[in-house]
Length: 368
Image 1: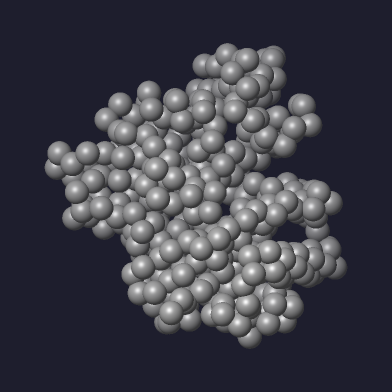
Image 2 (image 1 turned 60 degrees about the horizontal axis):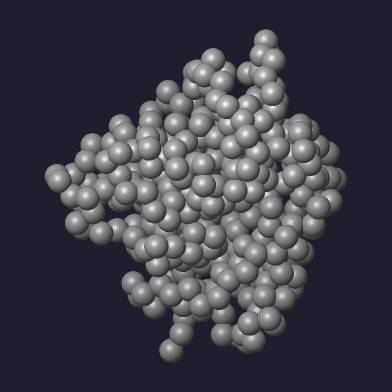
């Protein structure tokens, strides 16, 4: 008998709504179906404006929360219809929501995801789990990253030094070494600067196959300036987002430079690859086990990033998670289906060594 859960993810890139249908029976986690639905451009632009300006009205915030909840519900219903799945078969939906601000280090730490889960539950008729991050923050954690616990469940191998790298808008790693506690954190930018820069200069949403970056040359002076960012020097646990790495941040770094736009794109690719590789190279390897870096997320499709990682990490075999049985496009949606399963079954799902929380807790709030 199948135990079906749905995971819904809309990440830092805000390019679409990822939905995955997963069968979870004990330790067996099987992806059944998935799809990605584009984010309506007007809603995407409203969200980007909110994240970039950090200014809004209560009315605008409330309306965006409603619109996202309605969008998630519509796409879940569409997905179920397309796949011929009776919603009564689905035990729960795990919806991450859209992060609009993440500030775990202030005097009053908080993280904010919107997309009203009441609307999702009402319009789908399926129990919905959301608000996964705030309980971890309540226990002293960063509220992120949460996916390392899932990576451990599906990709840990007792005979391999394995790192799972998610290159979304922000890049994060999960370190799955034999006989060591799992650690994981945000290394820095993933696609957020690359997508923002090409969009600003060419109108393209992203640099497909890194074709634009390949036309440029790395500017080492700019690269060195980018690498001086304070976040990169912080010890883990740590997490970041658009609050730090955004176009205003980049434009401030570009003051005093006169560089062709494609050269800046090439430099941003190198910056992204280096911030990842620098962290991986710091890790203490277990014995003489082979080393694998498994990449997922949109950045895993960037051939220039993947090429640079292979060169910068000579001890490591650089692969995608697809080559180990999990579609990298679906990874985070599947993870939130698993987090919903944990919530329904009262299973702890954060890792204190990853987030910095003072204890393991069951994450997520249940909406019926």
